[in-house]
Length: 409
Length: 163
Image 1 (spheres, each protein chain N blue to C red):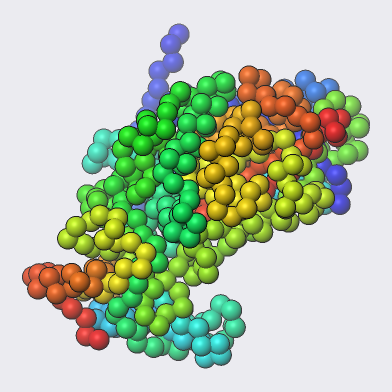
Image 2 (cartoon, chains in turn brown, purple):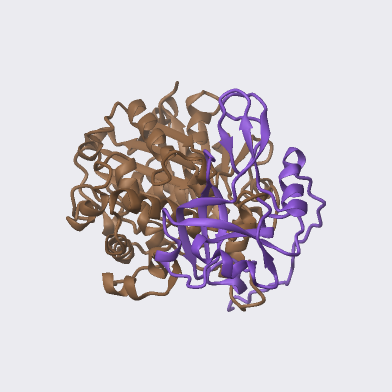
């Protein structure tokens, strides 16, 4: 397989709603930003040099358009080249990076565009005169339509089932430990000019916010967002040919789908997809599941809901099972902690523009490794970072991307 | 010049006559006879509930078996904010119920006179209650704490199962 590097990163601001941009216009913006970034790194390329695109777009009902990728393909000037769409719920971004990696690693393309976009808040609930219930309804069709959708299953109740089962088994995460994730990620977002929800808040503020789905409160949940994110991937020969100064190499990709029916799982309180995806990605990168916390500098996790971030610390091997809550109490995942998690603010701080999110997380981790993260830059000593995406019914899909800056090691 | 946004009103709507295929018997027995049917793998004996007519592990057929209408809550939550389709129903309890004898758990509504977390918690025994008017859909039944069963089946719109 060819070595694959991220040579360009483009992320638009994450906003509640863009009245001035369609989904394809947002996708164009991120593509342009990624090309500009690649050129800043020394490449001299335009969209005409890109050989293929892998699109990450989750939900047709958001975009009010089936096969939205082909309309983006036209708008970004990629006609007569291959384009493939990935849709794996909240994990769409991570899975899209994995497939764009495969496009280049396999030798099919030397330069590939990895492009995610989502525009959800055109959905509008007439009964309440607000957007969110209709956005949630468009998402709820991702639940099994035969047995589970009719019961009123939605994203929060699906994640809360796993968190509650984990609490029953380990006595953690407590509501206060979950609140710490919200305080951390809203706080980290203050330094990220692209984030939708920067906020200086306390554990008390989280505990006092309105109940959504017991025990998740409003501030435990990410907001749905509109944004686009793009990466330009290149093989080693192309990196040399273009004289790219700061390539961030993708050294490991892992993905797994666990049973989408939570009721079929042996352990409801953990996501085996996370565990398997992490083990595959770490092995490919030559890293150890048991020592991963000491081997990477930064982790951009999928914190759609605060409690799942705590459980992910355990599933991804940062700490033993049952100790995630204690780890955040001790400050481990804080921006100045042992292993900073979601320094950009994650989904809770930035917002969740589903198809774009995992590509943003990957791009953010790559910017950290390049030393270009701006005010939320963390210390890079080992030269390695991780991006994590999960989603779908029962958060069945998981993808992990490991990146390296060889110069920084 | 200042940007002026333009929006249009729209709705996507598709009518279906959705077939339940091999799972049809589950919905017919639920509707006509207030029975809850699971399936049992002819090779490994695993009992699937909700049912599937093929065992996903053995790749062998699974046969219909009548399930008990009592079970235990594996995990649950109470929903206070939700999708446009369900927002009129809040707050509501849902959880994964393991029917006695089943190897898997099914998602169902958990109704309770006092909808508090301790009443709909893991380990709580529950029993199925049926709508009097049934259409062969998952919403034809729900679960209540076993100690509330008698008070639910005397309500005019509900009735007990035919177990």
